[in-house]
Length: 314
Image (cartoon, rainbow, N blue to C red):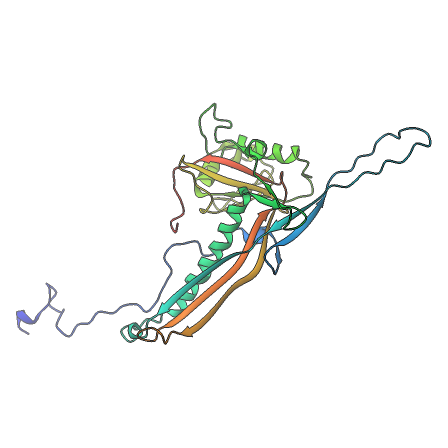
């Protein structure tokens, strides 16, 4: 064959040579599974709002007022907590003309990407609710807003740092446990969860209190990962709130301290859009859910110095 018919410098790269492309369609790096949903109290609801729990306040024994004195009944203090639905939707078009020009069927990949997005929504709504305003009241006529009081339920970024911001250090976890105990959580009966980011995991792995057997009655690091420490089940999420001051708002909560209400779990319908050129197929997905913290004192914010930034999909 003449030299002019060859391509490039490879003598075997003739004009009949072809290129082969994969038909596999994989997701780019992203959070695919819900990290928090399995740790939250959940329930199914209808309507514009739902009350997942009603609380009764403390009652106190008192000394009698005297022999044969009138009985003075105590009025229980009842508190009703509310959760409200948030709607989310996602539509993806698959162009019929494009399908004629490719050997890749994108539908399976699109479905996987939609499910991953739904799982992230569940986590985002729960994370936002941890420190957001919550709603109490008998009904819609007398709702009361409950703000998250950082002075009572927060471990400051400078805690244990001598005035400087610190990462996730051992002293901050000790302080979080103190806060839980101060608000009368039964430390022997409840399950504690701790949501951290990648930087906070690195912080823990660099501390002797975590890695040394001298400080722990059983191994804390398993296959290079801290899964449980100081009574906390540790969950990792890069979607925790990240502030402009390079602070990550980590969440510590009692297992009955956070709630997610489901109005509609992810539902997908496939239809053909005859109103558009090419009559593309449309995958339309929707979900409705809401979240709230259930009680003050059951959720603690731990602020940690962190320069890694927000999640890559934000």
